[in-house]
Image (cartoon, rainbow, N blue to C red; front, side, top):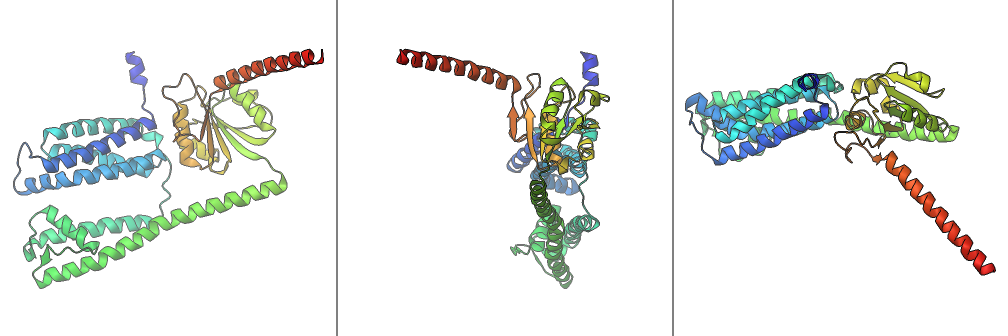
Length: 383
């Protein structure tokens, strides 16, 4: 058993769920920290850090939820960001100086261990260009500029004393909300505020355009390409392309049945599988649960994905990896030996072959009985 535990490596699905758990714990702990008193009341800089941790814990939690979504799609950038935020969540668990923050610290440390062991599960490129990365850096830069400047000039502002006040003033001013409860009292402070009002909305506007416009254009382009491809195939009478994840004797029969109606590609981690597959079936050797393998199999250009992962990994994990690469229909074969059933969010349809066979036998049996009854009734009527 010890050897089994030593060889165990958590799946990407486990990493995603533990990040979600840390996110929820961080949000709850942050809210509770605002409503309760700390075990130790810090003063000076320590007190500022403690006060900031009370409010920023919820922000870290919501940010972790976003990274969990990115990890579910297999993005490497989301994984790296999640690791940094989980470490920050652990720091919050210490800085808040509350008993309720102990679970957050313990869970975050455990989450870091899981993320270390699942590093190779997240390899998909985020496809962020230099303009998009620059936009993200600009947003972070403006926020740091506003917070640092406001805190450095805090004596020239009315009602500004702590780092939290500086963060609050930066967000309110840069977003042009302007509640007016903190306002500049000197000419230097006013000039700084003007610069923040100009830089904030401009940076956010440019960043939103550069970050989301390419994604929208890419989605529209894919939809148009798929519609054009489907139309061309219909005109030429070409078959659709189906990618099968996993290979065994059952998969070979499925590939044989599909080969006459579609172009079939089988992704398997077992070399030498091609000999038991029908002629004309393409094989790609690699782990069917790894995104890099699916990209090599051109999964993004297929019309449907059939997930079996027969003896080669968790079918649910293979389905998640397929979801991260393609928008095509994902059909999974139920595996009675799987640790967890495949959910609706992992596949468009789940087929239980054993149940289908039983249902077919029952229908055939009932159909024969009905035919026999009808023949008997007809014979009795003719007599």
